[in-house]
Image (cartoon, rainbow, N blue to C red; front, side, top):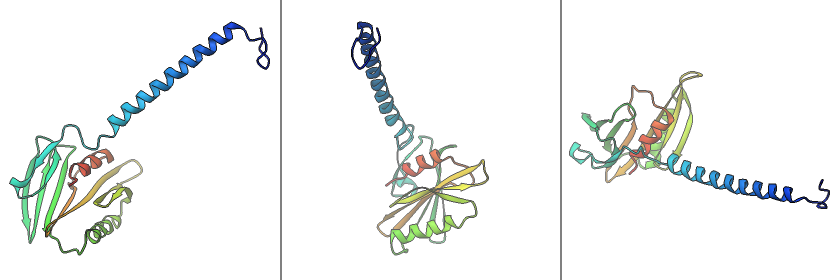
Length: 183
């Protein structure tokens, strides 16, 4: 029997609509669960293998998140201390500790932004916040390198965190390192 404006409905059509309604409910439930799973899995700010690491024994009064196999090397140039934090292929960070003389954190960040944005491969910022930024250097149409700068002021000292030089990082690697050094 053909339905026309609700007249002449057959019982088979009603069963089919109930089945479709059940499938729609199931679909929405699966979509919700998938979204929740992806949100929790994808929103992790720091790599799951990282552990809190106190850098005080290396002369840095800071705690960061780092791989367990972290190696720290330090040197001094003039009045500035330089630290290299090597945690493997995905984690290579340089920290510069010096006397805070930039006037304000914002001034220091503006200087760092100006330095990065004047680079010939600079393609833009992928993240900017009150503590720093993540940027992209577009090497060619197929290759990019992502890096970051993060600033922390503590007493009379400034700490500038950046990706280690000489390595190519993906946006995800740069994001993980940026989040790992948050103070």
